[in-house]
Image (cartoon, rainbow, N blue to C red; front, top):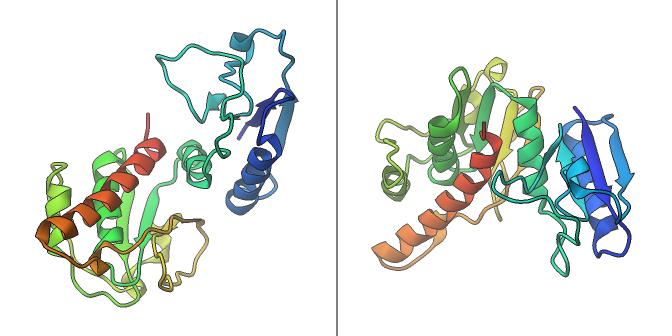
Length: 230
């Protein structure tokens, strides 16, 4: 995998962005070299498909790739924080093209079920998607409802204990636990932690609870759409 970190001096958060990239690479694909490239302001941006400083390219594709966007040479993040860790993870995972996803949370009733449903909708043929938990409690009806709003039928989803999952079918684990302890799953796999608050813990009327589930759904769809982008 070819990973490039492109920058020019004078922009904020260059070192923070590089440190975050190093962290993700060391966790997901240890031993992979990062090519750190200083771009001179006079260099043509299009020569490097350079959106701005700092840019992270995975196999030649910028994290902020947009086919309708012109390449520019400027301070990409300005006063904002450097790119979020999940974004770097998602783009690296896309390049790795894993074949077996497992979503984990404690109860396997909400977040991991939503992740499973969305991933099954987005994943290409041949990719296996599962979910499980350490204390399965049954699928929450709110999870089924918010998935149905995306055209995903989750009526046949069921909660499973992590012990029921065959390690041979998993090469990528995404844990979604927030405050609670996440299940452990043994076996060799890429491991990501996308901690999200449990929507099942939200009190209120039906619409309030559904909105909490929608927030989780929309966040997972945003991230998984990058993982499975063609």
